[in-house]
Length: 471
Image (cartoon, rainbow, N blue to C red):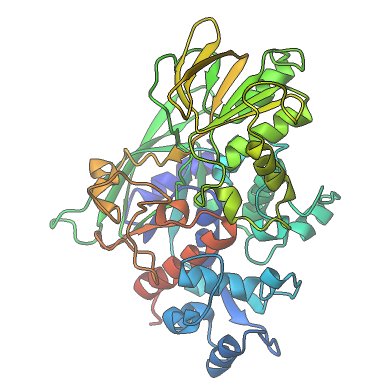
């Protein structure tokens, strides 16, 4: 926390803001960029390879994308995402990337300060959000170019930093630094408040029609002191992601010191020397990408691994069965290892044992873990470390009712993949609460490449409501 942040909150608390963005990850950064006057236009002479989209863009030559009909522009686009505006923005930023092309964006950006919408971005971490909490050497799922934000390519930033991509994908540490530098490079810093913990969001009352929301929280200082703040806003944007609360199994012994729910615990134990190639195996529970990353890290460090998961290996719902093998060979290698069902006897992969359709029942003080196998038989193993990596849940405890009534199916728990916040697909405004928006995983967009479409939709909506009108 610094004096600038204190001053920003002091000024912001005196009158309602147009928007408060809660979360300073890629979604929040991209939205702040668009609300800071940066305006996208089609580059003069640029031709999009999608003929129907090119025809529509030509019809409104010289008109900002933010001022066009996003529903109309996105109609007919197809791709690896369900959101029409995410597909649209991705197609404009990376026109032919899905066929392996490297065509430049058809957009050019103009900073038009008169279009800026007053806003504040509140985040617990530095700009970049949860990316600063991910183990820095881990390679990202998405290619480096897909992690970039508008008008600053990751590869250009890496060249500027005199570094090259280790492979087509960047490390998590690279991306965390890129997002932090992006905010500085684009002059967005004055709108960002780091170390801000939101504790409550209150819906407005009829007595306060000019301020629909009150946002309460505190600033965490380096000495761990807390300074409370209270802000008013006409719009609130939820961009917190879903990494706040790791999912748990709810089994006996899950709170023991050797049981962890974050991938970073593995590297920390390796660096401390508490797990080594001579240790008892590390148990990885889960069949998603975080679990695969843990397996890859352990294999790289020659640490023995037990890998347990509840589903059959060929379950079509497994993420490995949905990733193109050419783009993600290391994840498909993990999937191949998972197929080798050698429960008894030597594993075909030295130091790795797959336990498909196994349910972890309990963890004991003596580092013994007990499973129930597919035939109902119980098995015990002695392990050095347990990593339960079965996903995470958003922490929306600061909302009335923890946001339960905002989900697509309010009778079920909010879930980024199965039951996200119900939003209008062309504005990302909640269908249940006027002035409340949700971006990124909260709205069902789980890749950085596509979360930017939600920012475009929300920015277009907010600009229509909040942009200064000419006198």
